[in-house]
Image (tube, rainbow, N blue to C red):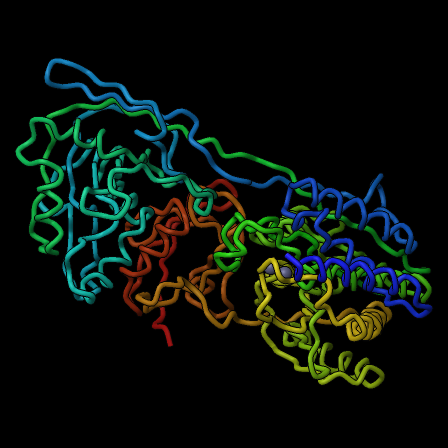
Length: 598
Ligand SMILES: [Zn+2]
Ligand SMILES: [Zn+2]
């Protein structure tokens, strides 16, 4: 308790003395405000995010920046899926002369990726509902010998409990509920029920709905049921649920499933909660535009993780649920962009410089994606995008500039600006970084991304304003302003070079081929929406392009990224497969030849 009091006193007194110092840091006030408890971690769509947005707009106006032409204010709202909850799913068991109805979430609850539907029919128990592809050199198929077509499948959560470590590892990868839903759908089932077996952890409980898989439906109604509901369905069956699980838990792949005596009615309903976040956008007009591509965009995300409840928090057990202050991530970048605006306001410019402060970055680059999908200025009028994410923890004079290979102009511009700055500059070619600049790279624009790198406080409540290196953050502002000025005032806009992503296709270790597709993770689509294709890769050779939506590959229907990842495991290098996709609302087919993965 004493220690906490002492910290409060120290922070308070440094804040006061900073205000009194004659040569104050240009970046400190904004970081301290944005990372303060009042803003509660600036979660996208939250009151703290709105307060931060208002503050940023005020600071931009103070610096002399204006709303974009034909815009009344600096706010660009966008919608996003904030979470999912059950919208009142129900299940009725009919059989044995009576019926039992369930509507309590403790008894029946839709899975977050469920389709909304009302179905009825017989129920087939299909063990753990696991299907491991032959290509894995390990045979396991819960559906072998079972006819589940137009029936509702009931499966156990997880994978057999009593097997050896190696078998567990092989099965675990296919036990994701998404895979189980896919397997059920591909065997013709019209619905899927999940129960946690009596021999597994949290036995008999329904699963809490998570929002991580909320973006797209799985193409099948799917619900989790309690042990009590499952037992009611097993009433009169040849085997009880506990006995069936015990047999399966040995890992023997030849324990068959069976049809249950009861018929059920199932209604699944998922409410996807839409919320609004806000990008803040302003610009400094050029004195008179005399150059091609008359816009340069300078951006940073200002949102952070709130109380860290959405899943990307790295908070330890004892810090869980606390405010994630996000001083370095990314009050530092936001503050840098504000200070850059102030600095550039007094210099003559040959291109308009737009300042974009994004929200929705932490939930999947959603704000900048909304901008790129619906740009307020045509993107072919934009010369380049420069991004700042985590620039407040400089150590040993080291600054990283990523995406240098996205234009032949960057190396020289950086080198020149660094003569005055004198940073130990680490340049990196790769423009595919997990930050907003990747959206602009995929849109075909030269990008640069500045960062001072990660640290032990990353995505934890302890990323606080007192740990920021303001002196060096101010130096980054001066250096970046010089880079932006050089870009804005160059006769020719920097040329764009397309860089191949270092790692493409699926992320599962078992995938041994690449199709050269770049999935769009941020937009909802029935199928796999392509954010782009790798230059010279199989998808480009097949004629696929950005905006196409793949709905089928090698005979496997695709409704989402999980289906696609699963389908990739079945492909063989150099063996052509048929790809069905939608382009501008029209169904098309091409042949694609996957390449082996190095
Ligand atoms: Zn960040
Ligand atoms: Zn972050």
